[in-house]
Image (cartoon, rainbow over all chains, first blue to last red; front, side, top):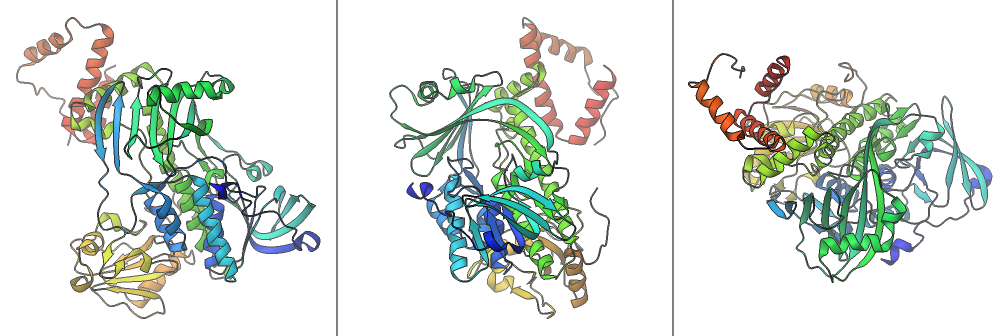
Length: 536
Length: 63
């Protein structure tokens, strides 16, 4: 645990503090979102400076569940290995109603993916892996830097740049940037400085998190209780394993509580004892009480200041949609920002970041709100239906899919949005235009690692015109050992040509395509030609 | 699948009897719980969201 306490990006005086400086991109906030964005930009050769008032990774477990899409992004950026080494893989869970186990489930992740459906891992480990990858990229000459002990105190938007006022242990200084990305969390100081609103729905509930360290006496399963039978546990409770023999416990306490009282060690211990049984030996690793809201900014792009992650949208923790969606924000923004900075695309490409990621945020908020309404019925009749579902679920399979303790994060399909090109293939729905590419095993490894980072043509059982793009040719007769490529990318079609964006989302697909068709689709996908109106 | 709002039960009196019999002796709270479970069972049997939307609309309009 030692690295959690190290100053991984300690403050050090910088020449900019006397001379001032201008950068193409400044990222505010060294959390999972800001660091992912910085690393992605650095890998693309776009200079990125990260400012953070801290000098260490975040304290406490915080986000603990990282989904496959996040691991795929981490893999493309080269920091997946430490996550997979350390993380706990799980797929089995049990759901209880009071003392009764109403059902158990195995998420039975589909075969033929390079990464697991999700892993449990404390957020600080995720941040350490990112910091290490950034430091390694920097050591190899990538233009990226994390400046700890640099607190942004002012933001001054101008027509052609943004000014930032920064406070350090050595006093204040100023920087300017073409683009500022606020990855500074749900309470975003930048959002406040700009006077921007953050509206949504407040859920009147408090949740107590207790992360306890103990020798494992439970299987690696997710256990969830509705109306838990232990003393003072609240309306629902969760038990889930993390690395280092840490177990996440989550107790739903209701709205009208005394936070300080509930956080006193003996009161936390009383609840944990209730769950684990008297005499259980454990140490409290981290405790916290949180409330949450489901809300988002109306626009994620405010001219030259762009918001990503929790600063732009906030959801309930049920479903692992916070950090995971934030990392997807970062990857969506990185390639667009890199192109705009290099002058390869017009600034309006950045509007598609708002369009796509606010669409994703709405989907996450919808899922999160539905889970919350199931967990905390707001009226007598919603309580009645919730209990009816739980009652039926223990007896009949049909009711189990209605039990909602959080729908786990899956990548958003950008259906019908502006950057989408033609979808002319009668192919599988899961690989429609707008979807993130699904992985598949090949003769020599997996598909996704072959598709990363730049616009790529994926040609299956057909030729691709040579227009200087990265091209991946697959012949399913010899390179598709499990038939997954056929099932996931062809369906009934004999052959297909996919245009894949740098973030591995599908930009267009055809049975086969001419050079002009592919060029047109790239123009659309880089906002160089507006073909249809923005999504309403 | 369009919602059937024409008579479709071969023995309406018999069904009505069964419905009341199921609730016999239950408190109001127990009856409400039974109704909730019954709605869920029937909804799953219908299995078509559009039909269920029509049913919700028809039921609401009668309220």
